[in-house]
Length: 102
Image (cartoon, rainbow, N blue to C red; front, side, top):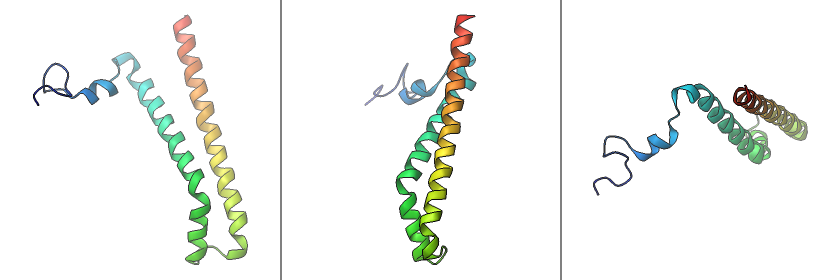
């Protein structure tokens, strides 16, 4: 199993090669990765926010008659967060394009 899943020998794993960026792109690559992670997190929360509210009602943290309102507010908050992340990603891509064109 020597050399499997490695690049240039066993000292560097292949996954490290996939996640490394050149020094010039390191900061932008990290930002892009965090934006994608944020989108994924918000997507997963959007899938389960109704179950989260149902659990809160069941545990007595939220009154039953306010469950629908809380669910709508959480959905709106998630939508706004998704929008902010999308705008940030579009701006990042626009800056990258402008840098290439200069």
